[in-house]
Image (tube, one colour):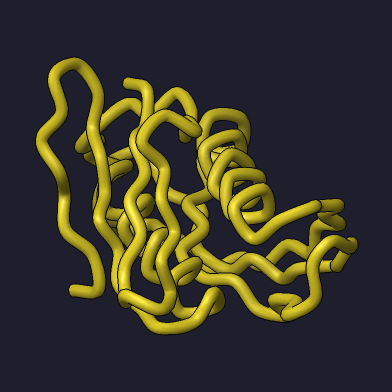
Length: 135
């Protein structure tokens, strides 16, 4: 796994690994998908392209992870991968999110509300980042 779950007093956290923004983002997305739960037998692959506007890498990561939680809450889609990740900040980009729509037999691990800026760190030069989710 390119992530590990962090104990937190009232929420849940992730430490995710990679030496580039793209790798860190995809590790965080895999970890977020894990926190939500495992795919079931009726999971169907899905892809969406979403326009994001951002100022910093941290801003973009929080926006993408927040969208991942939003799409699970509203459409039962778990996104676990992103493509077309920009290397220039600030800016805007159309980012492809891929994952799967879960079926009725889906087993939750955590009911995530949103990623937070609280204790959020992103250190590609050190090979890791950390994020806390409200639950």
